[in-house]
Amino acid sequence: MSLIKDPITWALVGGVLALLGLATGAGQLLKKQRDARFDPAVIEQFNLRVRAWWLMCSVLAAAFLLGETATVILFFLLSFWALREFITLTPTRAADHRTLFWVFVLFTPLQYFLVAMNEYGMYSVVIPVYAFLFIPARVALAGDYKRYLERCAKIQAGLMICVYCLSYAPALLNLELKPDDSSQAAQESQATEVAEEAPEDPVSKVASLVNEHTADRNARLLFFLVLVVTMGDAFQYTAEKLVGRHIIAPAISPNRTWEGFAAGAACTTLFGAALSWATPFNPLQAAGMSLLITTMGFLGGLTMSAIKRDRGVQDYGTLVQGHGGVLDRIDSLCFAAPVFFHVTRFFWTG
Amino acid sequence: MSWSGQIQKNLMQTLLAALARLISGSSVRWIDCQPDTCQRVYFANHTSHLDALVLWASLPAKVRAVTRPVAAKDYWEKGFVRRYLALQVFDALLIDRKAIKVHQSPVDLMLKAIGDTQSLIVFPEGHRNTAEEMDEFKSGLYYLAKKRPDLELVPAHIDNMNRILPRGEFLPVPLLSCITFGQPMWLEANEPKVDFLRRAREAVRRLKDQ
Image 1 (cartoon, rainbow over the protein chains, first blue to last red):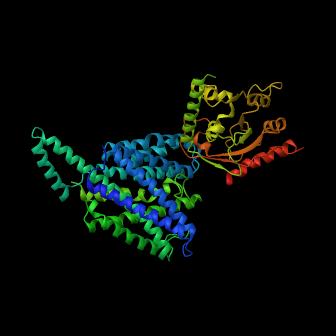
Image 2: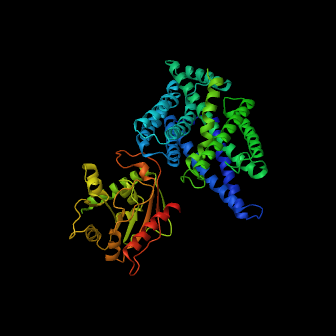
Image 3: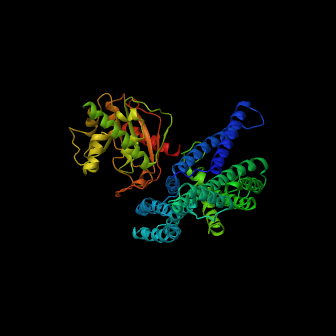
């Protein structure tokens, strides 16, 4: 069943399309002008990024149109690919082959299956507890003790970041949000309409309408998360180029500066506050959530940079032109998704 | 082959190549070399039973259709599925490593099989290597080049396949691999066997870091 039905969701999607159109136009204009003030390499980089955003947005929108299951499957595929990139770049030994096999073939699909089934009690523990115990035990059974702890930690970290953390993004679709004012009003008016139209079975019809309405609100919640994470990355990237002075961790990422982070986070907070109409939050809450999301996104990016530096690589893969690998794109989302999920679950569900 | 048989074979080839690329997640690079249907011998390092299949699958469809991997008979003739894939789909040239005879040398078999249209994929190390460094090349590549000096010899490097399907394992783990094709080379006039084999090995090894 499609997740895009009511006008608010259409407005959100339309707004994103307009934004992307604007970015594409600006990029092409800058390319044509050949202004000496702008570095053509930076513009080329920008245009490549915009192209990849189009691709990602179309895929996400298509999944939304196809419904909740399709969205969960999309995130499963993202996790799967990110984990491939992660394990490919973190060397394990031949003895870890069968452990890795179960990680890919059992734990990754299982996590998303449980998310799709809305089994919160199970999907929140299956990887941090059961996979956590399974991995070192299976590696020990294989009988190779060289760099044992390091190998186990690598596999565990990959599974936690790429699969467990990311799976909280589609899990937002199943949160039972407290009804807000507009939705209550909508439900009441729909309830009276339904009662007038079909007096024989109003209860089940109302229930299905309410369900559809909630699904739309949840879809917007996920959209909000992805949009704020992406815009947060973009704002920080731009701010670092414009106002960056004091580098945070030179050895890990020569681009990230305190000024860039502060300015980028401020812009993202305002951007998120302006989106509050599409969320269950009021403007102040939406601002706070955006600040939280973009801070987590920043920490995620920095963490993944540290792993990349340790492995001596620039990017994780070569799937989308101009965007490094899948993991380079979703590192911020991986860190932001579980925190956003839990805060929303704690304060906004009944 | 009948018309419908040919279509079925093409379909199976496309499917198998897609599957192989999916499992091996291979990115393909051509450095100083372009895909071409001219007669070539691709020679690569060898770490996994999947090497032959994955290298074949990384070629464009037109090139793939005229390229035959040389593979180990004892592995690819075991079981119905492997035998069907090797003989009916990717047209492997299966070499029996235990019964190499003087009057019917593998090199002669290969040259007879490709005629004057097809290309070959060979692994000159002769066996799957588990160490970091490549083994010395066996002399087959030299005799191929000597008997058919017109064949282009294209070095190829396969990265990470040993982690996707290591020696002695049955099921692959879908990590990402990288396949790099390098500049074609030929046997120089009067080049001694040892020098040529060392040069060929170096050509493959160099691709790893490029």
